[in-house]
Length: 104
Image 1 (cartoon, rainbow, N blue to C red):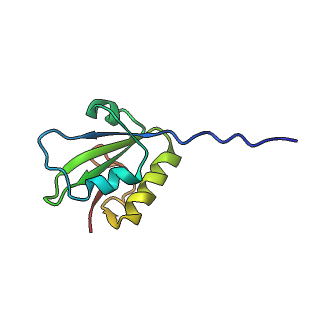
Image 2: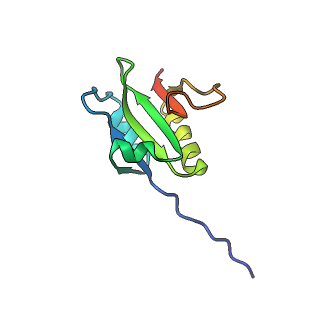
């Protein structure tokens, strides 16, 4: 009888962008995702990168995923928080981001 191997979901890496105001919803965002804190340079090395904008429209947090499944789960969680992906209809990454979320 074969057993299915379930790989644990790898945590996403995240970093705050220095000198940029944190969004008011940030504690809710980080409470809904499995995140490991890392340097911005480490996060940008991940296969897929998500940017999160604050109320002023500046990207203040970046999140990196090493696998598509982790990225997809993060995107779904952010959408559940009623954040909007500006790049949802884009056919490729823009400015190094695969998704950029903002408050609706």
